[in-house]
Length: 220
Image 1: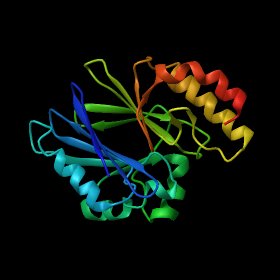
Image 2 (image 1 turned 30 degrees about the vertical axis):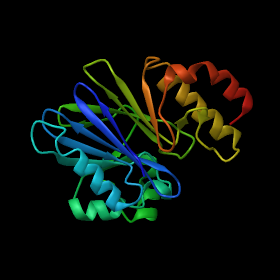
Image 3 (image 1 turned 60 degrees about the vertical axis):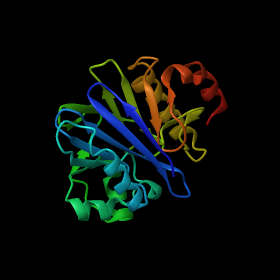
Image 4 (image 1 turned 30 degrees about the horizontal axis):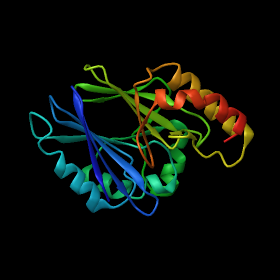
């Protein structure tokens, strides 16, 4: 289990990798008002507790949990969701087309179903919701555009270093995901945008952009 830290002008981003699946959990904290958004309550409640504890002094006022966002419905991204919702009563966010899957997998009713172009307010910080169809029907990337000029993309399992997410060999799903990633991420945000995936290491759009054509030819 390893924790990482990103210090932006408006917010901090802390992350921890948990479970046998090496899931990344992210915590965004607004520096001005202490509002926090947890992204993907994947597993290991004690590790999530430690993540919150590490962010206790990241804001000018004591931090408070504003909500829990889920990038997609797969079981390895929602194993701690129910416990954290029951403990905190937090508002929950997820893509509208994954709401039923999360209810079935975690027994959690999503408070705010999200569509492409929606945004989540985290105090003074806003995260844009980008629907990326293919890995799951309702996969959402959350994009933080910081006043200091940084762009951070929480891509879930839709974009990784080296390719897009798994589409189980389905050509239509692969084409859909790559089309959305190309038009809604690579054509919308700058090369220095950080990509923080659901598993593995951080990358940038600029590092991955030269490979888009090769990914399409490769077919996965």
